[in-house]
Image (tube, rainbow, N blue to C red):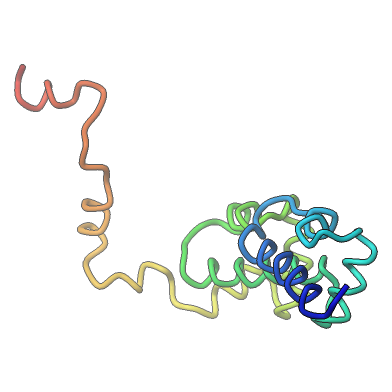
Length: 144
């Protein structure tokens, strides 16, 4: 396989991992995107990017989880599943291995997401609600 073609194939798989990290992707899925056998793909990916495809995917998931912990009030479990982890326990173990602390301890290092609001919370909540009424509420409001 010529060098440029190999690079394009590997980047296609890397882009897939970046775009769909939250899905239950396997190395075989990434290898298929690169049009390679899983073993050849794993070897070439590690040689090119310095880490296995599996490790690359886990790193993307953990980086996204860290970002969500910093800027949202979603629960750790919700974030765990949103970034593609199947188990809160293994997520917490991997997170601690990468960041040196639990997800909860990591979150406490940053101001709460609510502090990012530039308007009072009650206003944000009021304007964050759906404006289109459903379930016959319009008739009740107008007296019809």
